[in-house]
Structure formats: C-alpha cells, structure tokens
Length: 209
Image 1 (tube, helix red, strand yellow):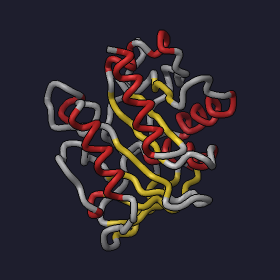
Image 2: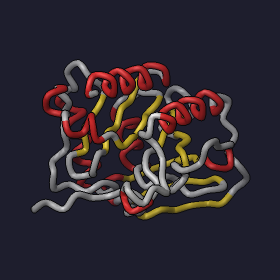
Image 3: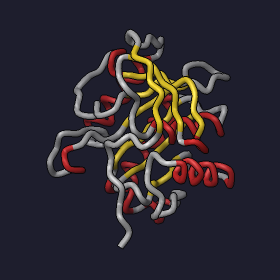
Image 4: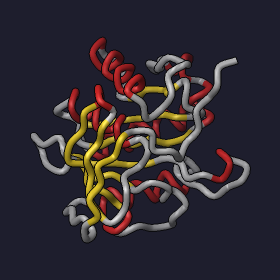
C-alpha cells in the first residue's frame, strides 16, 4: 500500500530571517480569496476528523511581474478566520535540487512553499497559486482530466519539485491545476491572475460535486 503524505511538516531546508510583517499591496485580495476557500472547507485546520487536526491549504502571490519572489500564507495558519501581513511570509529564493528555500517575515512559510516556487520559476506568467485539500476533486481527478503527480512522490521534497517540473513541461491541457496523488486530497492551481486561479478552482469544485 502506498503511504499517502499528509500536511503540516516542512521538509525542505529553510533559511529563515525573522523580520517585521511583510507589506504587499495586493494582500487584501489574497486574503479575501483565502477566506472564500476556507468557507468552502478547502483551506482549514484543527479538525480532528481531517488530517489529524493539522492545518491544510495555502495561497501565494508573486511579489511583482518578472520576480521569482512571492508572498505565501504561513505554516499552520489554515484554521485562522482572517489573517494580516503578520501571517504571510516572503520567499526570496529557492534551490529545488538542493531542497533549500530562503524566506523572511514574521512567520515561516507554508510546508508547500517549494511547490509554489517551482511553479513561479517555470511559469513566468503565473501570478497566483492556490493549494487546497478537496476530497471531491482529488478522487475525481482522472474523470476531470487533471494531470496527477506520481502516487509515491511526497509533498515538500525535491522529488515533488521534479515531478511538478515534469508535468509543467509537457503541458497542462485545458486546466491550470494538478492533483497531488501522493498528498491526500491535495490540489494545486495557478493563474495569470488571482481571479483566474480562484475561478478555475471554484469551477472544478462545482464540477466534482
């Protein structure tokens, strides 16, 4: 039986500098989007019936066009009803091959930050990435025509980074969404705008029923 990886553990080598809260002009829109998916149960935490009560789901946005830096919700913040800048980290550099990430802020970045970093690096037009946990979408990934990572590849590892790079390189078909087969209920979506990413994820959620 394949072991399905769960959320919550940072597996990459993190070089973190604690600083005052990160200021980002678009944070209000990012937070509004996060709250929307939290209300749908796609981002959350502290529910003993789901993932041992650990937080799940995260959201990020490229700092500026042409930059690989991005802001991302902090580790284990899914349970929070609303968040300010103190709950977001800034990722400034990454080396997927060495499993190394550099970040700063008032909180450490999500355990899925490496996967977000790979998307921003490989897709210069991607401006926002949303990672949720949706049993409905995850279980119907094949029917929905979603690309899927290999089932034996755990999240937050160089292997997952390489798997994401492989899928992105061969093309995504009609979707900008990947099902993480080895990460229970894990779905990751990106868009050229935050609205595009949010809209696609919402459409898939409705389609999966």
